[in-house]
Amino acid sequence: MTWIVVAVVLLALIILALAARPVLARLPLLHRAAVALQQRQTQAEALQQRADQLQERLEGLQQRAETAQERIAGIKAKRAQ
Image 1 (cartoon, rainbow, N blue to C red):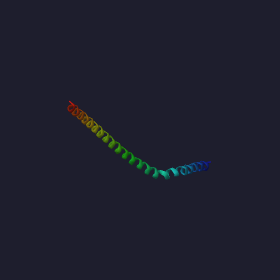
Image 2 (image 1 turned 120 degrees about the horizontal axis):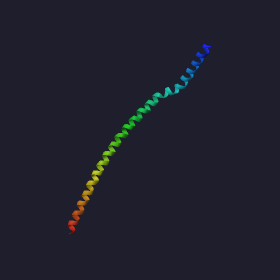
Image 3 (image 1 turned 90 degrees about the horizontal axis):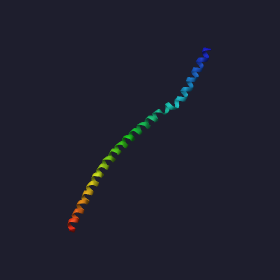
Image 4 (image 1 turned 135 degrees about the vertical axis):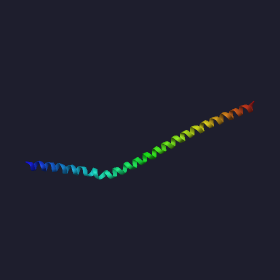
């Protein structure tokens, strides 16, 4: 009776090992993919930061352009008088 229990347990362990083998074989590939994704996330964050900086610069330039247009309009109004 004990031999039957041992045989069933061993059979279950063998089946478990065979089922886990493909998953364990793919772990290095999954690790490489995770590292690549982390690098891309870092690049995306850097690009987002640069885009924010460019947006702020664009807003500053837009303010300067509006100021220049107001000055030009003022100069034209003085000349018209």
